[in-house]
Length: 234
Image (cartoon, rainbow, N blue to C red; front, side, top):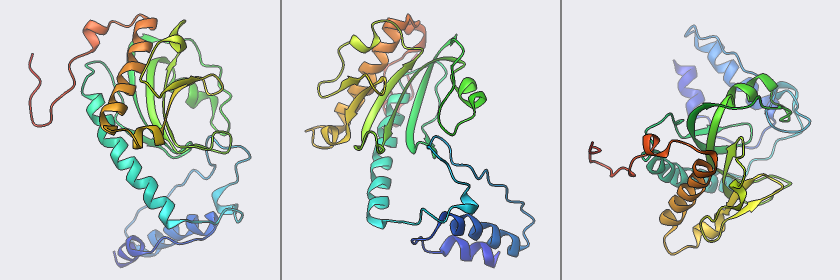
């Protein structure tokens, strides 16, 4: 167990992905705790992926940026969980996708969806098609990428119902035709007088746009947003 304790205390610092992949395997092998480590080495949802154990190109680490991102995730997680309480149908937990690096929460209508065409970079089509086998309204927080270099909250529907992108939503948000989803810039939320209320309204109005234009059974699927510490009345 000493090796495992050493791993948990190991500081995070700049190193290649190959080194970061090898380190946990070494510690677990040397700990004699009988745990087999299997790591899927191909990054998902990124162009030109490099196997982790062979990647000696990417080695940067910015502790301040990582800490700020973690703080944003903690706050987004808190509001997403409040939003999740207003739905009686199937809903995902608030979860983090390490491929695209976004925090998300998804509601399901209960109906099947058309077969997804696939084609997401670095992601097997079978995974995409299973994820979108049923109608969804999904929202999340994303730090952005080279094509969209700003942090933002997003919301989309699959399949996208006719009229979805034209529905009015939270002031400060807009539909991005390139991304195919509603966008609320993180800075717009962060500088709002009541950030929690603005984000919750964005989640609620974009979901309502999906549910209304998609013909969801809202009466059966929805309930009032929960109040912490109180049992929902029925």
